[in-house]
Image 1 (cartoon, rainbow, N blue to C red):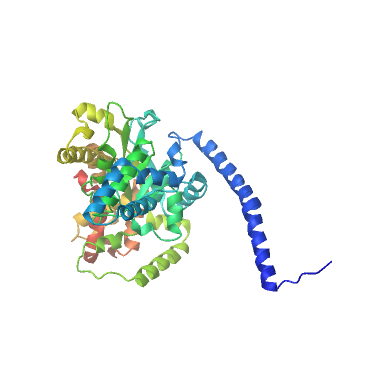
Image 2: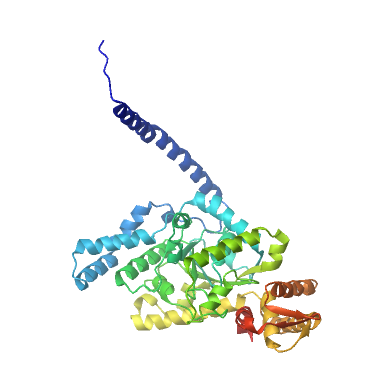
Length: 467
């Protein structure tokens, strides 16, 4: 028998090749089968307790949805028009459309959503805030047809809104968010897409991109995917509710046929915090002359903030950050709205349709304003701003807050502060403001710092619509 001698490098290459084949043909299929079985088990378990089940389109292969978008009739027309206007080959324009579709379409994974995302959201929300939830819908949410397309429409105060609302509705349904380009950071974008979110280029004037985005939102809405929309389009910078942006609502409604399509139900959601983590950054954006912060400054500040708060006890964290409150309002049915107002969005010309969509958006925005929670820091901030030049005792401030609460209750504002706990809750709110250096103290008297007027106005403005 003749012995064949091989160089070491050839032997190593053959060994690696054999290992890859074993991995590809034996180990990976078995692993995929094991993981798929676990995911299916989670889906079966989750669907038994969800009010709105996970929709079939959310299990469809992502590439199939991308192809559906690229070969959508309206997208094809947009591709042709884009190619003509930019004098480029049709194939190049189609590649751009494919790139946009791949960027937008999420890669929903039920296991990651409920076993990782939900756990993280719950831990983070409860770690920082005392979370309170209220319902002002007279039990109408539970009566919504499970086949309807449900859209949670909310005000936008903080990037914690994503975490807070996802955690609170996880027992009812899954949510698909539109997130900005800030989230397109590896590996964060992989987790966000697996959670069902889709990326949106804010203020993009590219007509081809807007058409692909429009068709994705329209297709997912028709398929019944439960979505969450920040109607203001971005974070409030001064604390007041902003005017509604019409883009997303228009995408959902421009092809909506009220007599034949399934209902689209909008659920108003009001959010408020005793402390918004990024409040100073938001207020700073109002000053157009302010210098842009460097990346190093942002990283240093963020790490310092996390480290400092990680050293606090849970009780002290709650005291510093206070309450995070969410209220769910009365659902608004698109079908009923169309019947009552004798409107068919799909039959209207662009200008008329936008006017009708704006009317609906303002109506929903008004519903949101009616359920934005009144939190202790907002109350205390309003009283401090009102008496900006005066030194007040703690008792005087609390008495003024109590009078304000009475006015708000008579106006129908959502206040979830029991009278028995009112004194301690307002005391904690004042302590939090003093601790942050927003209020100065002298001889047991208190007064807002003039230099912190903007930030106290920011919190007071969250309930200014009740005046």
